[in-house]
Length: 178
Image 1 (cartoon, rainbow, N blue to C red):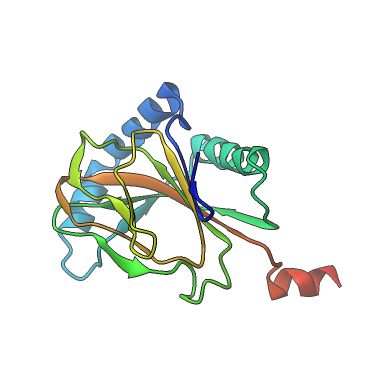
Image 2: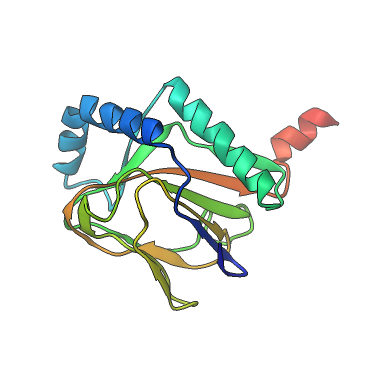
């Protein structure tokens, strides 16, 4: 459902199987998560790589979902990592990509953990007075040029998968095609 012309939110994107599988990956990486959470040098969000067919499958589903929703893009960039924010951290207000909004057409966030798993952690769009506490398995898509952030997580960990689209070929790809 479109919240407005720049923000889309849908609650039933990931299947129960995918969520359970991702939970196992997170559990298998609990030592990495603990180590990253304890590092004071790292910023608000942290990531760990996931090289697994489930990430390819979810990336393909995001791609198809964007097409089914008639969301225009040229390039699609799924990330093979799980991003997380732990207690006491959030994400300051920012614009995706290089900060100009010109290199990212859409930011896409798929929520592994739901509101019962952590306190705080809402995604918010200050220029639109929109705040979402996403459901487990949901997807949020926003235009790459709008300001957004993540409120501080009070307890628990907020796990997500992130992807981006672009409406322009990167110069290296365009050069290769000439």
